[in-house]
Image 1 (tube, rainbow, N blue to C red):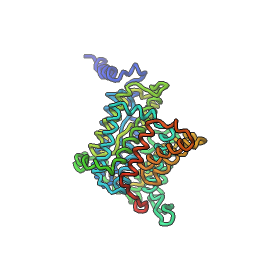
Image 2: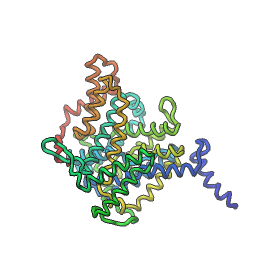
Image 3: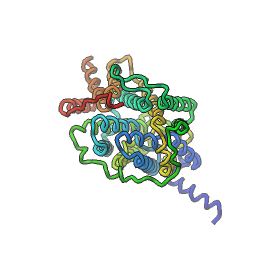
Image 4: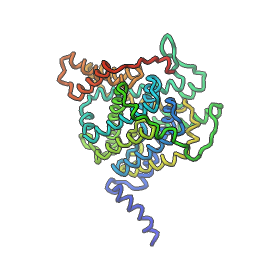
Length: 452
């Protein structure tokens, strides 16, 4: 067999599986795109374990499960949907899980993770019965924007808290922290490194920031060197521990619904955004193999929660790979393979201090709140619900309550201005479900001072 025929065999296989020529791309371009996407989203293997550790989960085990589910979801997305979209545990819902459901409401992480599981199962059922498409099409833009922005504010608040930039105060609830401390200075430095590099279109801005602040922390004695490579830690402290039955509690119904609803909007919006960037969507926002992509997304969420990691979603960072030419599922498969290799970097994950990831949380908040520009601020029946949804998430320290109050406010404003015909059936059903929850389900008072 000649050398040329040997080299053409892999190329031919990739062509048949991913249809590279039909998408106007090459294997080399797809590999570069996969590496680019991985570098922009690899921060999740450091940030997600840090956040879930606040819920008393084993940080080393979570590191492994984060890598595994990101690899599983991304490879499945590439092979089944043939789209350049990577999948990993979602930012926002991991903080809601750790700081609210476990920290403030007092549930064990096992039960709280069970709530994530049922939310993922609900999302899968909505996808199977095509209700997901109906909900996406009928939730008003103002509420979608309010939900996204509110989660952004919630995440940013956690970043400010983790870095010590804000601290509790009996008179003002929160106040500015000590800017002479390492935590505050390096947390702020990390954020500005990300913002400046991102403004200069450097895709790996978050990863670079985490590395720089961790190295500085090492030099200052805040971090202990633990090595670079090692065999993967055991996951037995997490896998198999999720309390699926215990999560079937009426008091968790609102939490389960919130997990499902937010994951629905987050992932669906990301899928549409990335495929639009790749030039794959039509004028209705539809894209090829949309059904397969939604199935992969839903199944990944179920698998991730069963393994013991927070809700899984398509990552908007996939646009970085698309921007350098990624057009097929080969990009996503490359991302998945790199996440598998990252499992052997667990010592590095254990070295990262909380202030090194705080800048990433604040930056994600900036990105998510930017969608507020889409709100019709001159129409109070649209802007008031969006505002209430967004601000009540951080102020009530609950994504669930923010969504609930936003939907109810939308109905109140439309009815009060005699524009009730603009309220569709979907909004009515969701609002009534939340009113039912508020009236009949015990609520949990949250003392913000105990959260810092």
